[in-house]
Image 1 (cartoon, rainbow, N blue to C red):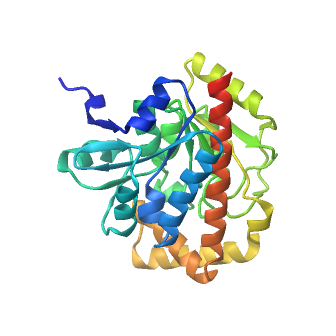
Image 2: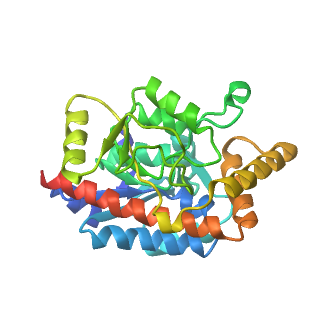
Length: 305
């Protein structure tokens, strides 16, 4: 029986870094294919990789095509992904289907965590994790990201969860499934475009060495995913009240049009970008770069302990 690892295509730079015990940071590809419009998507993909390299770590953007999981997409692959239409969003449930059909796939948070773990990568930078959607008590719409965090030993650096979600229920779900949520130099759960949600966190850390030590202890004891929640830099944070109005209007439009499931988040984020005349896109770019920088620092500290 063929092992899943035979479907991995780990590029030489990433493979050599892993073999040498150097810091490697995984990056998702859904933000390129679905999260941001062109050309902002390709600009941020390159900026995140450059930020990670500037910190002395190796970036590994993960995507799928031609029946392979690419661990470390090259510039041409990233550019193709940025302009292609109908790219499949790949979470855990979609992985085998996408590999079997040879289609292009962009990995979500859950999909990236899974593939990074297969390749031996422990650190991952993203924008915001998925979570419990508003109205989930009737729709049962809960992101697979949360379940993946409870089973896969990868540290996810993010700006909290996307603002369009029910953040309180998201934190409750994570607590139930034993996922630590560490406030990075903050006491409240960040709300993606907004630095503070008003929801207190039980755990806070302020220094990189302690965070690296926490990650090592977590994994040495057979525990799984870790969230490190980094607030968006204050100069790029959005005002909460008008943002909430834009989100509520986008969610109403989505409901009227029957948009749900995997299509909901890209639709709402696109609507919010239009309503805020691009302010949300600039905020998204800023938080992604900030998360990439910190993830690289965490990975470096872990590799050198």
